[in-house]
Length: 356
Image 1 (cartoon, rainbow, N blue to C red):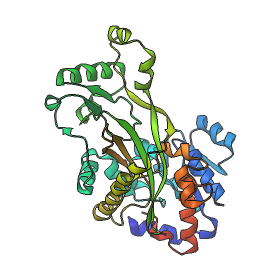
Image 2 (image 1 turned 90 degrees about the horizontal axis):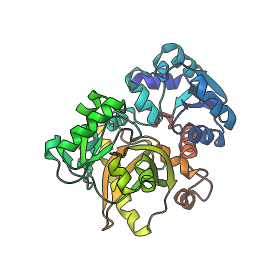
Image 3 (image 1 turned 120 degrees about the vertical axis):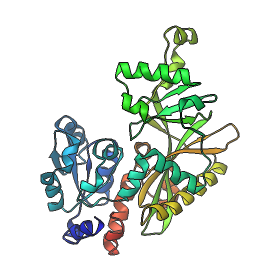
Image 4 (image 1 turned 60 degrees about the vertical axis):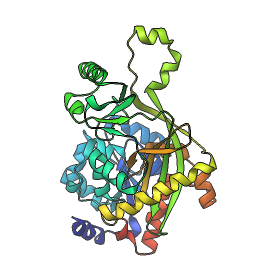
């Protein structure tokens, strides 16, 4: 498929590139960054969401679809290719599209690594090979010892995640969530059960630049999760009486500036993740990626997930985070960093090295 994509790219007018994405997740970030770097922009969205991108003035062109999966139709892909569009993937591509082998439009980044990201077994193999410290995994509910968190496949933004302390609790809560429609029985069958590390969740948004051959820390954030972050407003006796089981659907994000002495653990993890990415999916990491971690009471970093594309937490870094400002000395955020890399690649005739 790569040969086909390169042939598509060869047909492009590289002086008239458009940057496009699905109108969801981090599209404001991506499209604003593209405009800041002088690119035309294309937003693929449903009619209902169009008003958001019109209001902010970040989209030069709109392609209206009834369903995000319409992106896989040849008529939509043809329009994108006519506009010399390079797509920037985000979490909604994983959640709603998934079939990257049917998408014959150049994508910035490594689509094979996005497949590894959505397959929890492959993702765990990636992290194990990278040698990072990880929470213990339980193969079946009966193995649970102490607190554990139950997660589901795909980029669901924490939807339906819950905490348990034994197998009985796992089955009771999952059954209740199936009945309320929060998750499906198929989700339960595919659930991943991880040891719950008590600590602070920290999300590192890195960028691997093939142009500069380096890893860059662009932003750091943590998440605001419902209903978990709302429980502090409910007295303990009412939580018990109401049988409230907190879930972890992400509602928003907060910027974080980490203790400087802790950054070395993050950079070591990023270096190892990028190194292994080159072994599992040629040519390895390209562009944005996120290392999702927890720091325990001893300030030990545990990595529990990786995202091989831009994450919504980078939105807190617009127009810049302390880290991106220190690195670039100007307003820089992930959407703009992506566009800057594409701009430099066009100038250096390296565009083919960013498209997979």
